[in-house]
Length: 241
Image 1 (cartoon, rainbow, N blue to C red):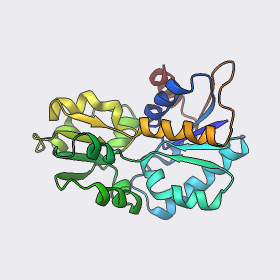
Image 2 (spheres, rainbow, N blue to C red):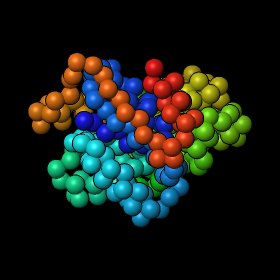
Image 3 (cartoon, helix red, strand yellow):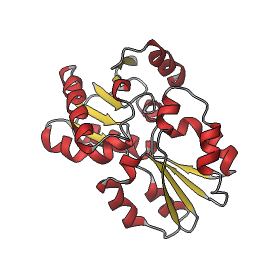
Image 4 (cartoon, rainbow, N blue to C red):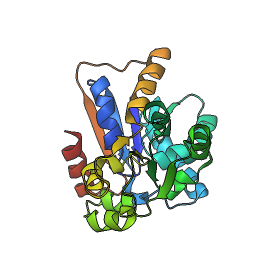
C-alpha cells in the first residue's frame, strides 16, 4: 500500500502523475484539511501533525509514504526518515533544478508557501542552483484559497502584477498547478516547472529497489479527509479523473 499525504487536495496534482506510471496500484490518499494550510505553521507544529498522520498511514499498512506537500517535505522528511526507518518516504520538492537544466538564464519566479521558502532543505537547493536571476515569492494564503475552490484572480493580480517579464515559474506548492491558467492570465506565456515528474520517477525507483509490489489487477484508492468534509472528497474525485 502506498500512502499519499497532503494538507488537502493539492497533492492530487502529484497523484495524477503517479497514476500515469502506476495505473493499477493500491493507494491511500490522506487529505489533512483539518490542519490546512501547513505553510503558515511553525516547524514544531508541522512535525507534530506529520507524526500523527504518518502513524495512521503506517497502521493502515503503508510501507511507502509520498509527501505530496512541499512544506511537509521541506520541513519534515529528514525527521520522518530518521524516526521511521522501515518506511520509505518519497518527498516532493520545488523543481528549481529543472530551471538549471532547461532554461538557466531565464528570469525565474519561485512561488511557494512561506514554510517552504524559509526551510533549510529548500534553501540548500536554491543556493546550489541559483541562476542569480530568481525571485522567491511567499504566496501567503494562496493554497488555502485553492483548497476551498475560491476565485484567485484578484489575489494573483495583486501579488504577481509587477512581475511581467518572467520566463520561468517554479510551482513550489502542489496546490498551484491547479491554477496554471489563472497565473498565465497575469504573467503571460511562462514556462511552468513542478516536482511531480521527478517524484514519480523516484517513487518507481525506490519501489523496484526494495522489491515492493505495486501492480495489481485493478486500481484501488481509499480517500481520507481529516475534517470529514464531503466537499473535499467530491472535489478530490473530480480532479483525479
